[in-house]
Length: 206
Image (cartoon, rainbow, N blue to C red; front, side, top):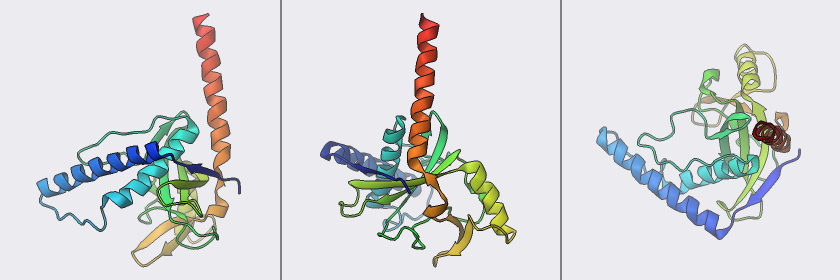
């Protein structure tokens, strides 16, 4: 499997640290305003920082804009990155050197296929041997339409690309990294798309 490893600079890490702190403070304020308990263990800035680091690396690899907005209710769209190829749901998982280990799959939070609203899903791991939050291993991608179709197959008791697993906190739909297409293919596709768009713009301006 061809993966892409990204090592962030000190400046990039500092930018992501600040963004995670701002978003976490906004989330805490919102939760308090609607009378809900705020769980610092489940919603801390450090955990959020790892996730947005993965989103940043995916956006950078595809030449897409990185969303730095701080929204009152957080991200409710169902995706993390908007690229020339469509919307992307990024899942960050801590990894080991065995990419087929259960727990390091692309997974939803439930067994509802419609929870996956993006055009693509991308799986990102911690890069081995690099400080967490600085090194990211972009492992693979899956077309959203296919994931939803395979998820319905899994719920019907057939197919093997998407599975129903329970890691101790509820059943969820998962896909192992080995079933995903190399992320490098998406990078190539995005580069080709941008080249076509640039040529069209030049022709229009001529």
